[in-house]
Image (cartoon, rainbow, N blue to C red; front, side, top):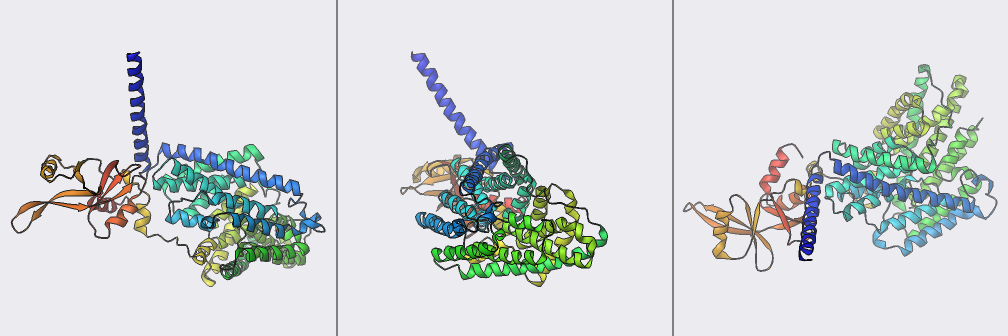
Length: 575
């Protein structure tokens, strides 16, 4: 029995040591700004969880639509009964959820996620998820002119970042996991893996790094596979008839691009003005006003409500009327500005697709009056309008192009869509100074997103990648300190003083008598999940000194980083 107990004790002790070793080794690997298998595996696991949350959200939305019989295809048939008041009911429900939720976690949406990714490594509070989930669910179910991508991006980011913090991953890896969760959410919603990857890089991260690619791509694949297993391999806009357009009509496309750019700039400006005006209004006033406006629009133009699919169906219908499409466009713009500008939780991309489709169809019909040969290409003009409007309003032309490419499953849109997007983008950004809608929303909300080049580079490397593990920790005893320092053999010597604070022990040369003196100075500590940016923030004040790195609690010190090592890392070109 004694030997059995001894063996079990040894096994348990060795297993604990092995787990600690694996944990430390994993953190050391993830702290580096390099491609790693471990990071890719973690991205896959977190993407599975994020995809599950998004699929649950979509299934619950479908169930509610079935229960109320208000799916977008049937909504036009029920405007004469009580369900026309659904936006008002939705306003009350949204206000009620916000009322019972904590005021500390009221921010949500893509702009807020952008802020957290840039300044807080993508760490989003878990408490914001339920409010986002149910408010967006009610907004979509009651036919506000909002899209699904807003809530799925927030929910995907929250799921991945919370899991990453639970695993106590380094902060530089938390940002990558957050980006992976966003990619999984978009892919699981729209069945567009490549567009999800491009959107994350072009809109969310706003930078391209090789070691980001594999985790984000794996997450997008995971989201897409999950989507196809539950809903099938469906391309939402593959029913739009697209015919290859001849080069002789490209001059007309260029003119259409200029018009699209002007309309996009006007839409952005109007939406931002409404957002800024209602920013300080009480929530109940804002959501009720949005509900009233949406209800009025729905009574006269029910096709203008919802995420945008009804408007697209009208744009590609047989023999559409220019007058009706123009009225529908105005109604769609009003409903979208009212919903997004007054704070109804939801995305902007779905409504932008509807607006772009209507503009494209109207331009095609007008052009066909002058040039009848354009008549067969209304479907292509519709897609081109969707691509240009999204690309200009969000300053994401590549993400818009790839999204429509995957959603139509037709590569013939690439060249004409690119050709139209260039003049649209240039006229909006040069003539009207149009910027990304998300960034302007952040300015209105008073949330920063700007990070200096040095800080941005240092945020990509964890402290464990640079810390010096060679050190000696001693208690405060003046008689032994000099002897300890002599025997340290190049290792850092840390002293824990009587107050429990850490100090660095050094020998400094005295210029007067050329003798060395024993000096001590206090140093600050950082958790091993921090990045070099936090080290830089502490040491750059005096441009010297050290910080110690601890794991889990301050008594468990695992390394030291000095100003010299940090400067060497910066000069090396790695950051």
